[in-house]
Image (cartoon, rainbow, N blue to C red):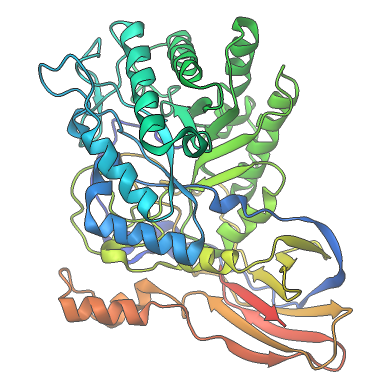
Length: 512
């Protein structure tokens, strides 16, 4: 995560970013190539299976917000409409969760139960991030964020280990080992960044050791992993430590954002295109895993983000086979790392905006959810063609406008909190899609997400950009920002379809 320059101003979002368009997008270079792109789909040839690894987990703000009605409503929506299966958040052990009330000698899990029960009742599993340090166990006063999560090492590691062990026993007693053994326990968040971990790398490794041993002592089937680092860091180092010390590890986890400093991510002063940073970083981490004593270890990317529909589609396709989980950060705009939001339309993270209003990113994941679980052979290019279990076809197309060299978003930066925005600069692109093996005259539908379809920003601007929308205005915004009705098409005599895609737009084509 690009949570790097922590001394920068913590001002929230104004101007163009408050409307979902960053200043960088306003000055993006124009793309004028109008050449038709021909893409071919082999409708009878399966290239590989396509597990929906982008639906295994999604991120959220800290644990305490999960007690709010809006968060719980949004959670149910991303489960039902987008298919998300688990949620990861920070701050489970923060003082506001009451895990160690003042003067208590034993942990208290009443608030944890409320949060986890709400998730389980909605069919969502916790992806358990073990963080931050309860003040009762902390060795220092260092904190992070508006909610003052303590980031210091424990004053006694055995006290931390006892907390983890007691916590795991409580979960198993409450939900059963058959359930809890399907969860993932991740140790801390981004310990390679000084404003998330006040200790050293070796002290984090000792925290990992204490956590892993405590969990496995409760039941060896409990799944534990890390290092949950920013910038795709420390994975090889942690695996070496686990191998040398015979410490259990069930998965490797890390984070990567496209504007992470490339010299740090890759170890050399390379300059990959913005759109290629994430897949290249995953490839690097996979090499580290294969070179370790745990070559078959699954890789979980537990944070990445963008508000650009075409970038999301491009990233998903580019990371197929490179990660077992791609956990998008975050599922909604109930988000207070820097404090209480001060604008209704803001550039903070979230598939859903304030009051649960859907953003283009949410609609993009809706379309991804409707893809099949078998990828069909197709042309190289901006296409992901699939077959569903019922035999119908679903393919996603996109028109990604490359980000100019050197241009950055504030993706993941905790002092900015502006996810990669949905730029609309550039030109529309014409496509011809040839379906080899399809019946002539087959009916098709096309569902779009672009600046004209499913655009919350456009709906808000049309409404006059009220700073405090009324209840009726929010209802109007919710209706206006829904996914557009599909267009009805039919394959031409030559088995082709033709259509145009606006800049950074995506289109789902479905054929039955």
